[in-house]
Length: 449
Image 1 (cartoon, rainbow, N blue to C red):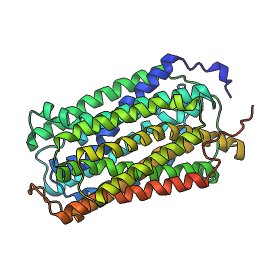
Image 2: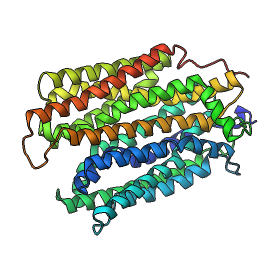
Image 3: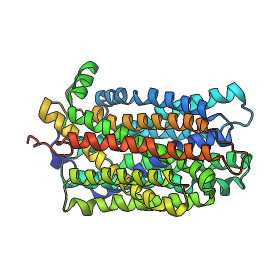
Image 4: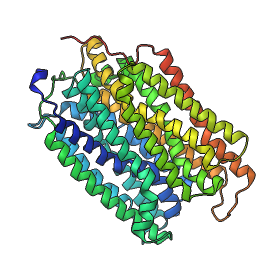
């Protein structure tokens, strides 16, 4: 076991770790937000097929996350458990992500579907290689307190910017890089943007690995794979956090996958989509920045309760608007800003809760399995994304949107609004209920010296 004083977490370490999160999430933001649009609108593949494919791939990949946690826990190298996987996974994921958005024009029909299925599946698997060790390293090199919260909030801030930037700027950059709005222009634009993001991804990962420490605070016990899973399931705090992650993120991912359809077909101001997403992105970043201010006066549990209440409020407003008329840019601004604030606060706090669950496992069961428990965050986020994109894909086909019509039928638009609002509201309410029931969630256990 390494004494805490032997690990120096400097400002340089924290800054480069944050940049690693930014580069990694640029790729993730592009994939999670624009896969459905790229496959459906640019490549011409049916939304139902895409939704089913992406749900299967995400579920398959999500359940690789605990396995990756086992692999990391059993890794032995001169550079520690985490850095080799962060480095290798980042390079592989960047290459696959570029291939995913650079589909050869010669591919059609079944060959096209096979190509997108393989590249999407590989993209998720390689992302796991880097993401699990990236977030697992926090409780491995820090203890509960100021340094951990500072490192987490800084990394989540940069990761949030990385994930939000594609949401805001992708379409503008795609049009610019591709030279127009036609299908061929979009294919070129997406390919070049993916190349740029891949380069940034690799560069920031290398910088991060160079500045992270090689040693760790403690040496996890050499447990069998079966024992690792048993200890994970016994950690009720980790399981509660996992449920909240999947419910909260399903609500958010449904929104991000469907909001472009709302702007294009209901509001009929697709050009305003970029400005709306820029506003919500700025609010989310401000919420992440405000965490340190909230933390001076409130507990982490109180702050997360605020985030959940904001999320419920936002979807109640969205639903009210949808029930009594059509959306507009002005009507969508307030609930859009509120849900972005909720997401920003949650983005920081969930990582802190996961780290606390690691400490909780050590106190309650004498086991400190960083990578296994930390893998839950990625697993549940991917599972939420799979659920969201599956229902979004099926829902888009169900509402019978005709892209060749300038004005959709009233029935189609009403169904689209309900698809946008109701499932997310139910998920957010369920997340709030679990949090209220698990009263100890977010409270750090008394750690042994």
